[in-house]
Image: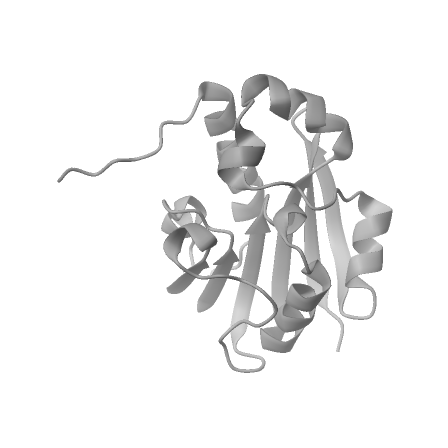
Length: 173
């Protein structure tokens, strides 16, 4: 039959678009890009400047637990847009990202702040059901703790009135 895309309300679409634009500004024009939590549409990957684009998401059939099928030091860029807060074991995925990312690679993460929970409930009351529950929220300090010894935050920005945040990280080797 036809292509049945999930219709997004305008605020959800705007949030996705802003996250994508923020991340794209930091994605290098290189070889391999893995997007963890890419969603069924692979929205960011379709816009990525990288030659090889790999999407991992439960919606597309990959159950992400604690391993990523990739060789050591083989990936130029890993993105996780609004996905780390959904992971049950984020520290395991961060260790895997460290293992597979090249020494000069980038890890780019966006995540909402806990102060934005009320806003999510207003613009998408079914968000926790359709996207899965948030396991935890991060701020700059807690993200630094999660990345400690593996990645260094090189850029930190908030957007959408400060309710969302962007972390651009480099590998510590």
